Image 1: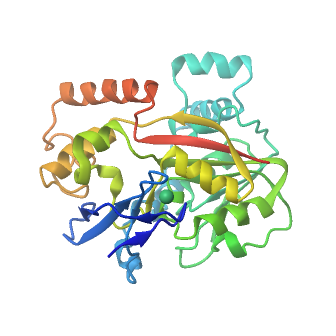
Image 2 (image 1 turned 120 degrees about the vertical axis):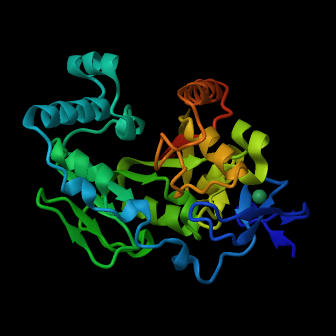
Length: 323
Ligand SMILES: [Zn+2]
């Protein structure tokens, strides 16, 4: 079967890569095609039963984060760290950055947000990342997730709406709309970005954190590259393919930050050795029973840092502005 690239419309003539579902280890094989026009790697056919690959224990749907009871002081410190990471401009922020940024929120640094900015996280699962923002004083944050049984309302006022972005009705516009590891799961990326544009306030921006292709991890592991995540990841975008896509929707890329982690190496190494992500022997589940020594992980962390500096890491955060 030959396919036409869904991003740049080039007829793809290269043979596909056969990629096995390995998060749960169902063993099903999916074909991925690399476009010679824009270098995007994409699934040949989106399975009709794609929902079955998002079981109820899929990590992003867990609401455990709202149940965590933490000691007052530790919680205050955590909130300060997140706040200063996102705001990124105060003396406190600079001091705290010397300690460490709040990792899941570090991508928001330098996006011009204030405590009253309207921010929407798309494909947020149960909403843990922005629930934490609400906890530390960001007043107008919300989440959007089509794959939840019903709208979620938390005690602190944070809400996750059940909707696709293309038909989401909001009574105000947003300063920032984010996609954290969700955009690569979306089958209609152009319509999605057009929907984002309609919801942005003047000067508003869009931030997308995604796996990027090709990368050193891809070169090293090919079909065992963990971020292929067949068949959930429909597109593994190259920067070139993203440029083409966002331009069609009326955006331009303002900033690309490579922020891949050791995961790209330990996850891929596990797949190569036929160890699924959900296995008892997976480093993500049980470090002690995993195949890695502390030195291995240290080496992977170092390699990830180097890959990011050389722009060959397998993940990036991309900031878009309206043009
Ligand atoms: Zn293409």
